[in-house]
Amino acid sequence: MPEAERQRRQKLNSSGREERLNHAEVERQRRAKLNQQFNALRAVVPNISKKDKVSLLGDAIAHITDMQKKIRTWKMREQD
Image (cartoon, rainbow, N blue to C red; front, side, top):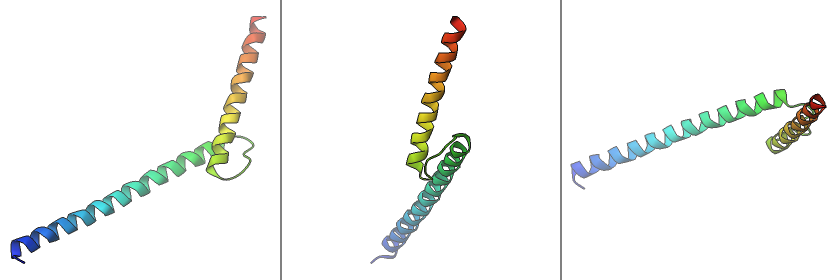
């Protein structure tokens, strides 16, 4: 294999490796941010049924829906 071809392949391999490492780091940062947001949500939602993320989201939805109903009720009482 000619030297120029060998150098070109090495360059492609090293840049591909760098891209994979960069992608892995970006993904790691994305997951860390996502987990931080879940922890923040966990801190403000009362009565969380389980520790898993799906349950947390369901409990947050239920809590927000309940709060919206309470707000509507209070507004109706104010109008009376």
